[in-house]
Image 1: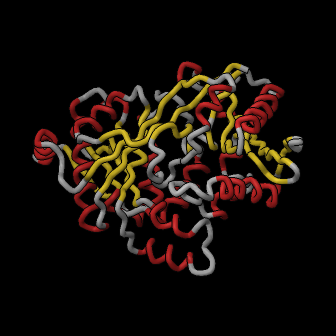
Image 2: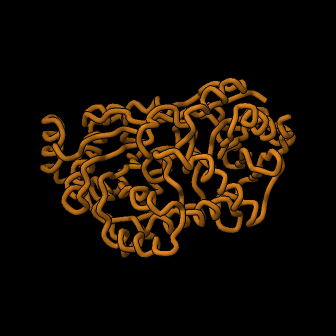
Length: 384
């Protein structure tokens, strides 16, 4: 007789550690899962360490059979998401679940139902998932591209999950894609001509960020981001505390030559952020900095050598987004960063994204530089 399934909320340091530990067991034999640093993963779920909790209520659940953990899920309500226009995907009555992992479909359905009940009891009428935790962290379920590891700040998943989620009554509402490209051979001639024309335009200045003015530069980038992305599906503004936290976490892998700000007539109007793929460095550590992982990681951070560069964020102020100038600025930033990524870090591959399936501007840029979709993530919805 199969032991009964029990699902209970967990909190505190031990509960968060058990929540994170299940993923290590579940994906132990998956060669393309990248074990996170345990301390970082646990800290992300700690209200005292993650400023997301300043505007959200989060509940973690673990499922057990005969005392053994067989699944996990987080349910949450984001007050900033509730305040967004419904036509942009969030809005009143919308709750979320994320971090869903389970050993069987039956266990997954029980966990999802538990999250739904928790949300319904708090007045939610619609649920989106997976969202782990916010749109700025690891949104969506991986549905294609299981054959290679994700890059830094991107998620991985069990290939069985899509069918399990759809069988629980969910339907896809948004697809997020990442684009892969070989950066060693340069771009098509038309892109080179666009870049060359921009270099002759005295109004345009493409500059590196100045790490000694990191706070000021971060404020410029986030200001452009909030304007550029404000009408995108799923947009939720970042708070000052979240901006500071992101800056603190990213600062060790920020390189001045990999982040560019585009100025027109002296005004910052666009940016491109590129990160060395930290996952290449942390994957062999299996989640631990002990006994010598910290030394290996510190050495890598001092002088990253990486095959892959990820572009997690690009933005052009909204008033320029339909103009030729916007594309020109994008191509110039991409080309300048491409050159430095090869020369200074030994990179040979780039990954752009994620990109929303209705972001025609970014899709056109990705097509123009001959990049191809390598992973897709789906966000699902259900009426409660």
